[in-house]
Image 1 (cartoon, helix red, strand yellow):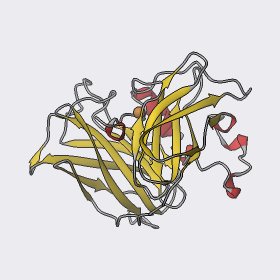
Image 2 (cartoon, protein in one colour; image 1 turned 180 degrees about the vertical axis):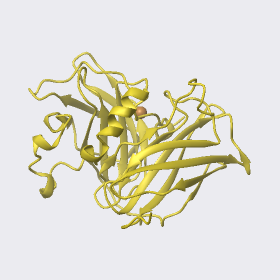
Image 3 (cartoon, helix red, strand yellow; image 1 turned 30 degrees about the vertical axis):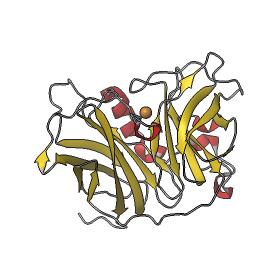
Length: 284
Ligand SMILES: [Cu+2]
């Protein structure tokens, strides 16, 4: 299995975590806006309820040569500047790394390994040149969830792709995934993703990092990273193993978003991708 398909979880697993994050969703909003963009150059710490702007993501190298397994190394520094070596496991992992090229292609959700000094490393599939955004999603021990991002520049000829048009169906590896729900700007939205294989509903999804599906949403305008939380978890007695997977998210604004659903079936992880348009006004 390639690094590109070693995709995994990022959202909060426990109902209590879900409840807490959901409750502050409106204030929490998108996170991980690119550092260095002028409009984000002066993050107001008081605006970050989790204090996440006081942590930093430091890539060892922000330039890389293209290749199918390019080693990436990085540190997470705490507000004092020290490398973070103590994390709270979320969805079976201390840290989830989401990597996507700025044109929303080349999506990867991987799990780096950490050494005792706090340096994380993971190979990335950077076969295609361009600027990638790297999101580190983690929970420092005793703290709130944090998502940080950094740019990774891959040298070579860049052939940017347009954002695919909005669609409620996606196909991947012989599966068709259908999206329903009413994405609403500035309010909680329930999204339902339904998985079929060769036209038949899939009702034997496998738990993957504590859930039947993991959904990452990125805002098309600025790659703001949205937290999306699965509803229910395997083994809770009420959450079915498909074909429907339900999520809660709060889209902060109208516009287009790119969604990436990871699900596991027959021992393989697949990623279905959607473009979603959140209408400017919601009709009640
Ligand atoms: Cu993950």
